[in-house]
Image (cartoon, rainbow, N blue to C red; front, side, top):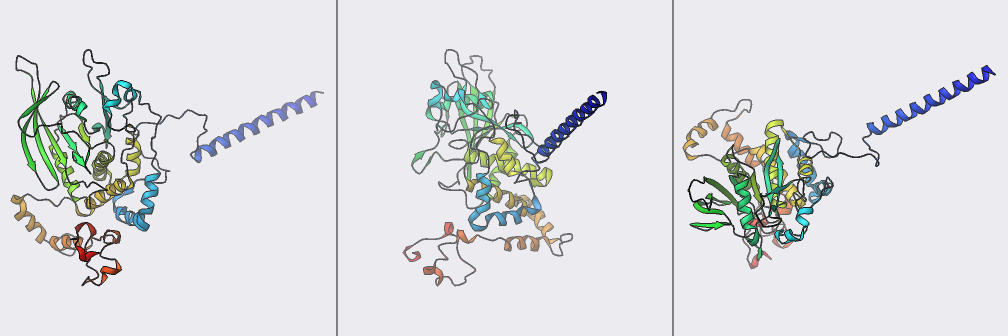
Length: 420
């Protein structure tokens, strides 16, 4: 009897041990393969800096950037489109309760572009005005810099006062505008600054100090001040607006060179003590997101010698929906990064031209040629995609080309009746 009881106890112990081992093995297998049971709570970190090492689109070393771009651009950007479509539309479950309030609906330019509650910019409330703390704008992290940017929609006529109130309260010194006021005869943004002199928006007086018009962008300098102070002791602040004017109505710029020069000026201008850089287009997600991603990835390239476009776009989409709206914008980001990696900053002050030429004439260490020759070789390596020369490659136009290797790009062609 005792022996039978002992045997039963041993059997029970063995069964328990087997069950424990199976559970441990099963749990280990689940963790190894990176799967998580649907019933477990998932804590999604907002803009985690450490990229996932097992995802399909990991960070790219800069020396592999050109090779990877060529691979992804094959078959009319097939792999780029797949990568863009793999981006999560909304990486986290986020509410837009403030933006959805009846009192705030008219403040939104587009009904499907609303700021999340957890990352929206809060204005100080105006006495007696309900929901006056709302503006369609969101804090966006930069590369290792919390809330470096504010991504905002282009102001509407009824939100211009709120826009300047945000500029004042956030201590913003730099505004980046990546849209024209009208495109395709459609209003994209209200003009929120005076052409000359000064104008008062709400309780903020804005006066134009200087305007510089360049090929790709315009720089406007404003002096802003709160009004209503009889003592006259309210401080004045300088705010610089960088208005990129070369973004086409359709698609993206033909070359990223203008955008890179534009971004360089923005970086050089923004003071260290200032608040977030306010970036806006019309909706505050497409071109705005493109600008922010290029800025962050240039910083990452300098710090780590790699870029993580997929990971960064995923993270900022957790702060504002639809950041980087189209696959063309996504490809343009890579083109800008490759342009910077291959050719760097080639802009020179006239006063430094003589010393720069002296450096170019000197032999480059390990290159076997002078700097001038090495620079020219970089130019000869530039390739233009065939899909950008479709008109010149049409059968009807092939006989008009004297040299088949020299065909004009579609966007640079002079069109007349003979090109059809």
